[in-house]
Every structure is written in structure tokens, then in C-alpha cells.
Image: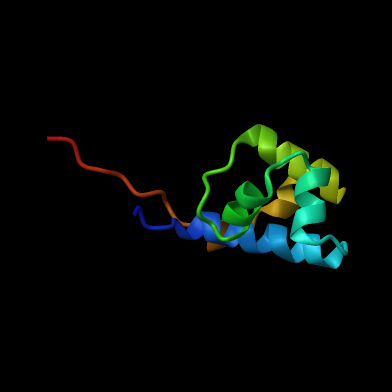
Length: 85
């Protein structure tokens, strides 16, 4: 199994926090955002690399600006890079 990237974990935690503040259960939220419940769970746990379209759906459902789903830049890390050769 591939290691979770810390950026995805942080974004997932922010999404979960906003969802909970808005009073959505995970199941209600997934249905409202037109996402599968298991997919939404993987996003919140940082196990799923999320598409831009899914981020837009999440932001619209939660009624927040897309930028609110991201932690401050200083908290993010450079993605892993595999060496060639």
C-alpha cells in the first residue's frame, strides 16, 4: 500500500472539520456532493488523491471558497518524487 501524502491528510482533515461544522454526517455530505460515501471517507482520511472537479463539488456543497479546503502553504510539503534510472 502506498504511503498517504501529508498534504492529502491535511486537506482531508480540513474537509472533515468543515463538514462537521456544517452539521453533515459523512453519508449526508457524500450524497449532497454527489460523491460515493466510501470515496468521501477516503478523501477525509487522506487516502484518495482528489480531482479538481471533486474539490469544486465539495466546496459548493459546503458553501465555502475552494481555498478554505487547503491549509496554509507553509504547512504543505513538496510531493514525493521517484528518481529515474
